[in-house]
Amino acid sequence: MTDTTRPLEVAGDAAERPATPDPARPPSGERASLSRDARLELRARPTVWIALITLLLMTAMALAPGVLTSLLTEGGDRCDLAHSKQGPSAGHPFGFDLQGCDYLAQVIRGTRPSLIAGLAVTAASLLIAVVLGLLCGFYGGWLDALVSRVTDVFFGLPFVLGATVILVAFPDHGLGAMILVLTVLGWTTMTRIMRSQVIALAGADYVRAARMLGARPARLMVRHILPNAITPVVVVAMLNVGAVISGEATLDFLGVGLQYPEVSWGLQLNAAQAFVLDHPHLLAFPALFLSATVLSFILLGDAARDAFDPRLK
Amino acid sequence: MPAQTYPWGPSVVWRFVARRLLHALPVLLGTTFLIYTLVFVLPGDPIQGLAGDKPVPPAVLAELHARYHLDDPLWVQYTHYLTGLLTGDLGTTFTGRDVSELLADRWAVTLQLGLTAWVLEVVLGMALGVWAGLRKGKWDDSAVLFGTTLVISVPVFVVGYLAQLVFGVQLGWLPVAGTEGGWPLAYLLPGLVLASFGLAYVARLTRSSLIENLRADYVRTAHSKGLSRRRVVVRHTLRNSLIPVVTFLGLELGGLMAGAVVTEYIFNLPGVGQQLFQSIQLREGPVVVGTTTALVLVFLLANLLVDLLYGLLDPRIRHD
Image 1: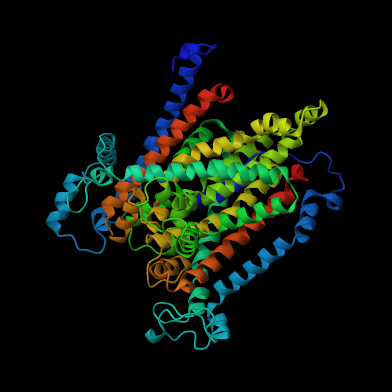
Image 2: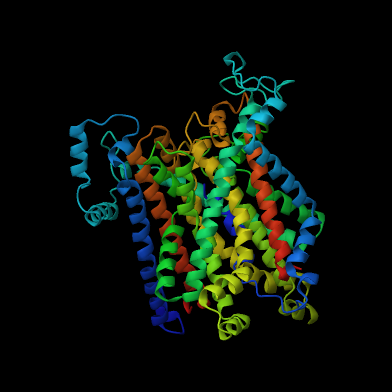
């Protein structure tokens, strides 16, 4: 179960080193900026395109599951127990689930909670990380000491174990509560990275110069430090989306996440576990969709890290 | 070990140990406090919440409120809970059995599984990483990168069932489930599954660290003074490249033991994680909370231990 927290750290080795502004960057800006280089490099990578197309498909399934199910399956909303657990066939490429519902339709419907959880948890964690990281890194002192200790405490709780202990105490939770819990447990890595970035930049010459020119703390933080500090955090955030999706599915699988009659990949995998040997399609299709989504976010994060890190060039 | 053997005297070492222990104390207190607050203090009646769907008679509710000091102020409640934890009291099941007693003979299985997975991560992960790093850009490097990315993206329970189907059922190389084969045979497949994620991560970390170090000036110096490639890689580059890997592996030991829930369930290993899974399915709230707390404590203590050991081995950490 530790797996779900660890993609965060995949970027950690590169991300924790502060991205010092490239000294060789010419003053003319747009011509050869790091971000332009990065855009060009990203565009040239086939994996980036594959990941983007996969995620677009997943987003479409999350936004309009009804349209896709009616397009792709015959009578996708009808369930007939007589078809229970039947394997793939023409007209029903994914076969049927336990209740005899078309599995393709069910898997498409399962996309939404995963994507919402991954994106919402990451967005909330990113917001917390940016605000806390800026304040703590910039001001230091007692605020920094306090927040660092609190971060240590939350960091000491393994992701899935922490979520299990909390969610079990509230049996009637929905997706909203899960997002809240996963955010509470998941904001620490990004906050630590953001803080170390800000600390490294707060003493940089260009920030000191801006301060001497009379810039106020708020302006220093938002206009001068933030743009240079945010890249590694955004990279980790991309990897984090995959980690959260995987974690949410694990919690569903364990039986502490979403509960029936909700539809999600984790719940489908949970239902499939008893029939793995005789009906492997029950496991294969949600697992395929889940892995493809997580993989896409990881590929995007990896590519972004490579593109934005000048030391790897 | 006698501290006097260190040339810099005992005081540095003991100061380091004391500092780390002092640092760990608030984390231990904070984490247990967090679990306690989140489970018992948030709105909604905790007893009803832990009982799940079953209705709780008012008399039982009052009795349990009194027993768990739920009507006292928060800090009094937490003190009672903490005293219980310190004396090994993890709470009781619905039938009145001690949770710690329930877990007692399960720790060995979890420890064996965690250690097996850890050894696999160390051996296979590092070997793959070094191999890929030395052959950067070649087809086998790409294969390692592709494979590890794939393993990182596939959830552990899918990896588990897949491994069971392929190695256990189709090929019949290893036991499908259970502990009948004894250690290490019965633990190899679940160990590999549990290790899969960390293994991929270790391989990538070793690879990138090695590649970065191979470009360093001191490596070029070693090459230019005529050392063999083997000696440059093994004696000069590898030693420096493995520092981040060793850091990760140290913290991984606790994580593997705490993270074995899914693996123990899939492979039917009677460990602590399997107990947790079964209690979740049975909606036995108190057992879930007690078991999770125990696993979190093991995780934290293992990390503290590794941290101390690591500081004793590496002087730079001791002097930070």
